[in-house]
Structure formats: structure tokens, C-alpha cells
Image (cartoon, rainbow, N blue to C red):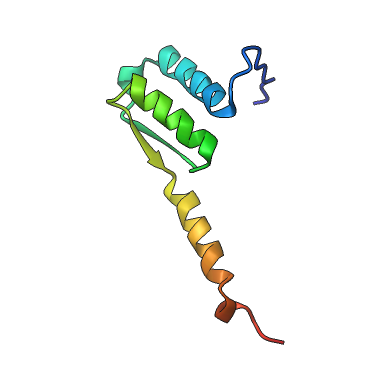
Length: 85
């Protein structure tokens, strides 16, 4: 699904993401959610904080798959893990 993004209020990316997430929460009904997950980019951290302040009963979690990918990447790029020619 492609959605044209219009930021007419000059929001930061985190604020914009929070407003988009909040629209979903309102459309589906926030009380049907127990939590949601995303990566840990600074814009997503801001969005999580905004949503959590408005809906403290909804847990905001880091995506474990994304966290494992970041850890795996870091391990594979340690000096002693890189093949020597």
C-alpha cells in the first residue's frame, strides 16, 4: 500500500509518526491494543514516548528481530571476525 505523506503542520518525523500511529489507534480503538514494536531509531523513540504518554496502558517495545540483526551485524564486523587475506 502506497500512501502519500503530507506533513502540512511541519512536524518532526517522530511527531508525524506518532500522529499516524494515533490515527490507527483511534480507528481500531486503542483499548484493543496491548503493545506495539518498532526499531529504535530516534524518530521512533520520540513517537513511542508520545504514544505512551497518551496511552500508558499500551506497551512500546523494541523489535527483537531488528535488535538481533543489529547485534549480528556488529559481531560479524569485529576485527577478529573479518577474514585475513
